[in-house]
Amino acid sequence: MKKIFFLLCLVSFTMQAKYYEAVLTFENGTVKKGFAEMVEIQDSKVKFRLTEKGDTEKILSEDLKKIEYTDKDGNKYEADRLFIHTDKGEKGIKKGTKKYWLYVVYSNGIKLVTDALQSTFRYNPSNGTTTGAAGATLFYLGKEKEDGVFFVFMLSSMNSINIGMDKSVRKHCELLFKDCPSFLEAVNKENFKKTTLMNRLIELYETNNCNKKVEIKPVAKPGIKSKKSKKN
Image (cartoon, rainbow, N blue to C red; front, side, top):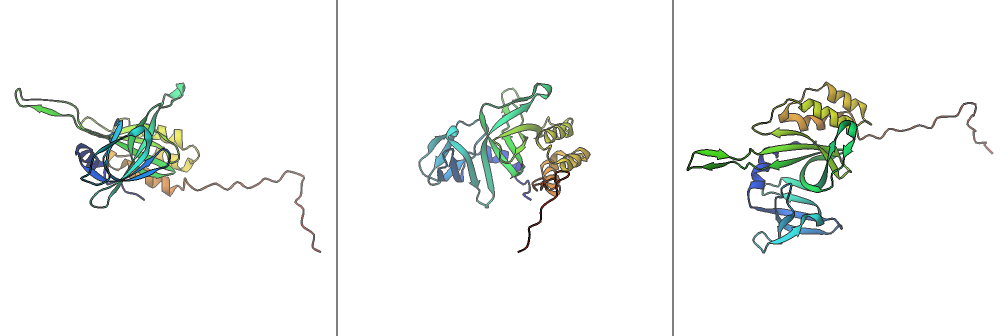
């Protein structure tokens, strides 16, 4: 199981104008290797270089499918362009119409992704005041082979508390994984914590074998006996 180790460092990475070893995959299947800056959710262009100190090229985000980064310690990060859907309850699902850059935490049947928002706090020494908003890690949930996810909860923020988290997790799991009742039962029994939420969801999904295909056995029709082959 892939452990969640980069949530705290992802915000600091995106705040640095630094180029990381990267593999860009385009929508048409073309692959381009070089170095790129870590993308943020709204980025319309990706800054790319063939070499770390080379000339900078700006590539349109809409032409890209994903970016795979590797840092100096060998840690890998994947940013995918995904739609963000919203469950409106009785009104149904509002499908996203625009793709955003989101970082994949885990994708094997269940898909967990995050968006690291930068802190915009700025201190004004002339009057001693601070303005702006705190950084945060937003958590989204979806299915591996689908290009859309649902926002679930804000995991790290000065203003983020646990109220409503379990309800939102259960609601979106029920929406996405009706075909794995044992997983839903385990989720409904769990009291999640923000610091371990994603790891715990992965554990529950894996231990309940949600990716295992159910074998459907043919049902014999009443009154019809199977014919045995005659031996010569």
